[in-house]
Image (cartoon, rainbow, N blue to C red; front, top):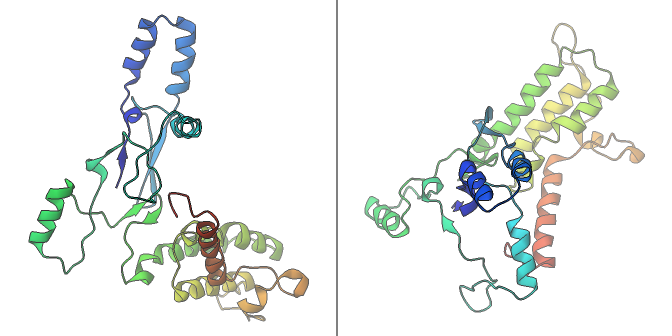
Length: 263
């Protein structure tokens, strides 16, 4: 569900006209409009950046901070949907054009039509990505998360022809390759097979290859390489263990802050 906010629809020409009509100094209005109109957007579509896009409306502002301060001062309060529920901000409307409904394959078409009619959302939920993450997971997790492996493989292929030292390879693995899945792993638990395949690719890149494209000997397994340096390893990440750790941190956040809206 996407929330439609009033300040997303404010036309810049209208805003400038209102400020001038209210008597603000022309120089001051110009400075304000320079801040407002400097925004540019890029749209990610199937991992490809499209843009920049120059908008003609919308405001960037700190409305949520003002709401929290007013609530703390007792000047306003939200509504509770039931006893014991957290208060929610009012005045927001659903953007029906950007909202969708996921249905199971076992749901009859008549039921789908009734639900869509009641909620007012007619479009099915796109199975693409939202904020860089898959919208729907389902049972075929390995196929859904295969794009992570493909991105890392693409990076490794671009590095292979470069004369890299062991120190250079270590930096690329730690700072680039292992950072690619971190955002996704902070939300989802990746399949063990995906993590192992990624680690095999990184292990092969670390040990390098001969000029005739034959594989070099892997003198140590990834389990040994992922041990901390002071204990004889290289400090590479065990991806599945790292995945569990950051998800555990999310779980601990829910337990330590049970009054937040997310909890």
